[in-house]
Image 1 (tube, rainbow, N blue to C red):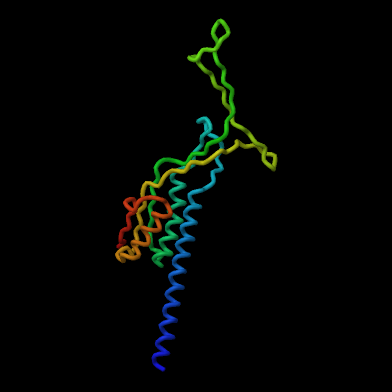
Image 2: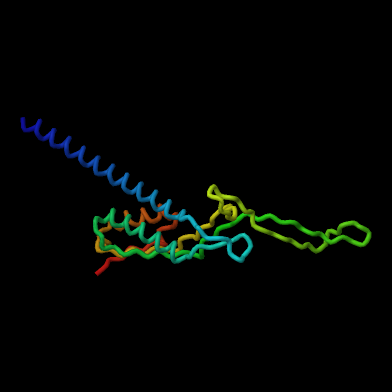
Length: 186
């Protein structure tokens, strides 16, 4: 009878451990997806004076990534006392479609030369929106690369939690672990 009770207890224990592992896996996967989506912050900027390129503030992107990463670290540690710093290389840029014509200088005999000077006139491709407003046609948005991440948390002395944080950050941002620093807070 005692053997049967022990066997039932062992089965229940292994089932609970599997469920906990699955919960952590789904939690980390969900947080990773949230971080990937965070990198796709839409820009509502209009074209800048630089031909066909506009930018979103680096500080705004860093702040949004830090907030989402802080939520991920809190989910891993179970503590809401974590501080996060994300640094980026450069700004986000939005590239708009342009159209233009090129004027080619001709020689006096009417033939074009291969070394002729060109003169280009470019303008933005404008589209009419459903509400009747007009805007430039956005081709793509180029996001800055993550330079480094610092996480400060009271749980940093636990090697398993530190490893989970480093793995989550490197996976979410596609950066090497040498660019991630997890530090114990006081």
